[in-house]
Structure formats: structure tokens, C-alpha cells
Amino acid sequence: MAPPNENELFQYSLISALLDGVASTGLPVAELLSHGDHGLGTFRYMVGEMIILDGELYQMKADGTVSPIDPAAASDPPVVAPFAQVTRFEPTATTAAALASKDEVSGALARLLPGSRNHFVAVRLEGTFRSVTVRTAAGQTEPRQSVREVGRNQVSHTFEDVEGTVVGFLSPAFVEGGIGVPGIHLHFITRDRTRGGHVLALETSGEVQVRAAELTKMHVELPVGDEEFDAAPLRGDAAAVKEVEG
Image (cartoon, rainbow, N blue to C red; front, side, top):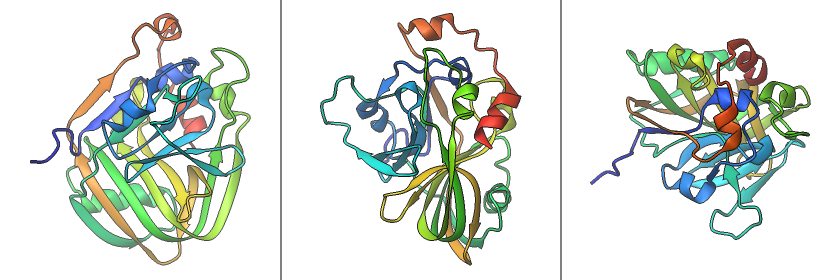
């Protein structure tokens, strides 16, 4: 029998909470992985970007490097995610496509899964990329610093002629009010799992494998007992999200 959350989106917290700087605590990563094997997010104080690939979790850092995270390893403080999205990924559609830009990913998914405009779509791209430009923020420098302020200190890196995997989600427009990131949200990791980050731009070198799954169920878990979350206005800011996400 298939797991009950197969191709169901699990999300911890809200993008509007990150906009308000809610990032000093979060969901333990071991618990996060119990909800899926494919996903993205960030870490305590927004230090680096998270990618979950085949159930393995990695932290992507501001210098473009990547470190594996063992969710079972003891650490003080524990490794947590103040915001994350995961699913137990089971592709329902697969194709090969050449993509000249990040914007073309959304179009490829629309052709692959017609009728998914108002649903979430999990996506995985795999192959050789002519160019991938990523960015990763170093994190908050003071408590409750907003994701927009953190993003102003981010560093970008461009990897050329590189093999790797892109993991992410295409989200419908209705999440724009502060729930999530509307449109395409992608993280990249090289085949050797040593470099990566949040995708700002990409171009493939010929065709890459495109695997996707339409997600029609969403579970959102909100922080409990988190003073920062309880005090945050959570009004959302579409312009800020667009500026940070690229």
C-alpha cells in the first residue's frame, strides 16, 4: 500500500513568517523527513538553503558548497527548519526537454501536466546543465531580521557545464497572500553533492530528464509555542518574495 502522504505537500510554517524574521527555531529535520523524501527549505536563522533529494538532506552554504546533514546525529542546538516544503515524490509524468531558461520550466510542466494550473507540482530535473546560477544567504545577523534583509547579503555563484539535479515545486498563484512562494521555486545540487544553492537562472546542455507529480493535497503545520511567530504580523509581501526568490 502506498504511503498516505505520497504526492501530498507537507509545509512547515509560512513564507510570510520568514518575511517577518521568524527563524530562531523550527521543526526538527528528523521529523521533517518523516513527511517526505523530496523538498526544500532553510535552516535556523536562515543560514543556508536546504535541499532534500531521495530522502537525503543537505545544507547549501553561502560560499556555494554543500554539506550533508544526518538527521539522527545529536547536535546542540538541534538542526531545525523554520520553513520547509516536502513530499513523498512519486512521479506521474516524465519527459525529456531542453530548457533555455528557468522560466521555461513552468511551461514544460504545464505541457506535461495540463490542467495543473491551480495545483502544486513537484518537479525534478536531472542531467547536464550548460549553466546554473544559484544564490545562498549567510543568515540573520540579528534577531528577527527579515528574509528580505538577509537576502541583501546573499552571494551568487554560476556553475558551468555541470551535471546535477534540480528539486522544487511549482505553486499556484493563490499562495501569494503569504502562505508560500507562487510560481517556480527550485534548488540545485551537483551530481557529486558538493555544490549548490537556490536557483536564480539555468540553461540545460541539450535535453534533461523532467519528472513531475501533481499535488492535490496540502498539509500546513504552524509553529506552536514560538514567541516570534506569535508576535509576527504575517501580512505577506509579494514584492519582497519576488525580490528574494528571483
